[in-house]
Length: 127
Image 1 (tube, one colour):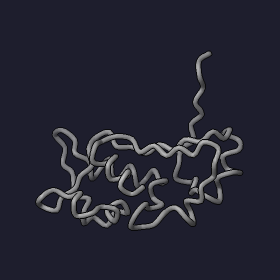
Image 2: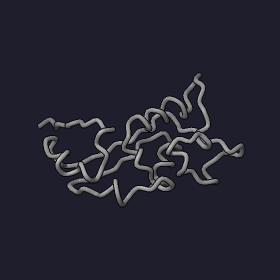
Image 3: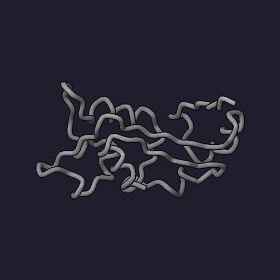
Image 4: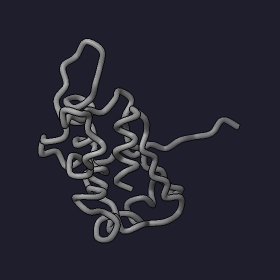
């Protein structure tokens, strides 16, 4: 999972986490600071990558590699350029999808995902 995070940052695309109707225990089982940090569910951590460590035309950006940012721990030597530099590309974002109804999300996911750092959005289909 950590390499999917790196790939999404490197390619400037979405890391899509599809839960469907499951409540995977990310809080206790499926995250690790060195492979898949829990901060992937924290909008402020994602926003910091977007604002500080992302290549944008005409904008300054910093090296994520030695930054102390939680996502830096996931990087491996082959992820860096020749000067030990890593920056995300514009377009990187994280999206978590569940089939739970908005009123049920907290009940089903509060013990498995840190919900406080997420923005809940209900999608409606045109019929």
